[in-house]
Image 1 (cartoon, rainbow, N blue to C red):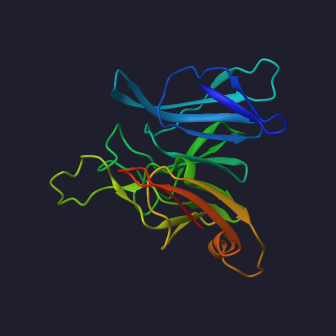
Image 2 (cartoon, rainbow, N blue to C red):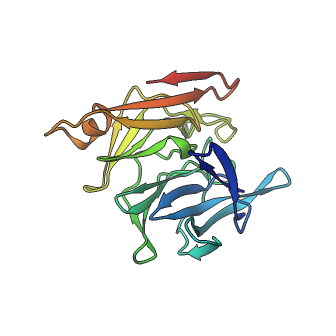
Length: 231
């Protein structure tokens, strides 16, 4: 199901259902169209594969309908997708339910003018469960938390849960460079928001994205779902 929140009326309404039931795909709003990419094929309590399909819904149409667009090259789920500088950036995720050993580092960019994808520099380490904690800022894309693979020597390497990612990532779309920064909130599927505070001339894109901003995240422990807030 796809829902839209009307802030002025303080109510929700339902959009047309997606053409397929997919779990953990990437969603982002770009130029008046809601895009949904990839996701896990999950039913009867089991994963049956991953999708690479791409659908878009024109929010402003009188009778909106989902329409197929160019598919991603990398089927996966629990990925992130961010609208940034006029394009869609889809990155990370996992294969099937293997969040402890099959996290992905791939990064793709979608150009709506040509309906095409291109592969860019991958993340330093594969990371999944980053859908609600990947944010577009005026100076790049920030990724917080998520899960990474267990060590190769771990006898239960592919048994969930994965390892909480303790560092954050920043992607500069102009240079194509990823930068890792420490002291990020750790944990999967946390919900984060970005609030710009000020602009400092001469600062690096990473510092402009972080030092001149406030990031607020709600953290959930993977075991007992305790909630905390990180600033």
